[in-house]
Image (cartoon, rainbow, N blue to C red; front, side):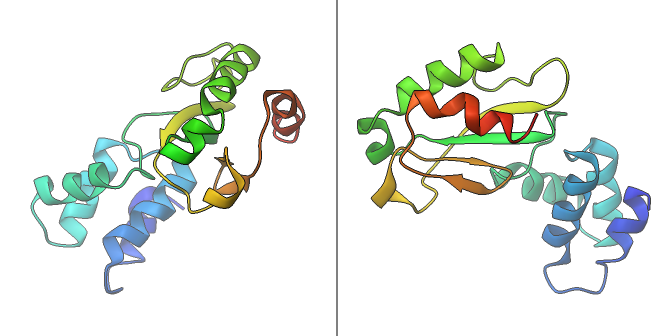
Length: 147
């Protein structure tokens, strides 16, 4: 299914532009400009409004990125519990810096705000799946699940 067909399938859904963006991102890995412009047409909103939706929510990306999106919580509880050590372990293991994707397109590293798991800090998510009470030593095993 093309991204145009995907977007059109949500045309009659209340709040459908967000659902359509989720579906396109799942399909393509990000929201290209053409898809945002298509959504503006389908949902009959100005292009700036469609882009505003795409850029407002941190779960959407308008840039191509790795297939497995690793988001590290940067809230105060995670920071105090050792998030900076996890950042170092992730960057070393993947050979990239926060905000980048691996050359093979397998991983993207991003910061995020609280993921609602403050009882088990530090926390990261991969494609939305949470990993709790992390230590740098666990990073290689976790990443091996996605390689």
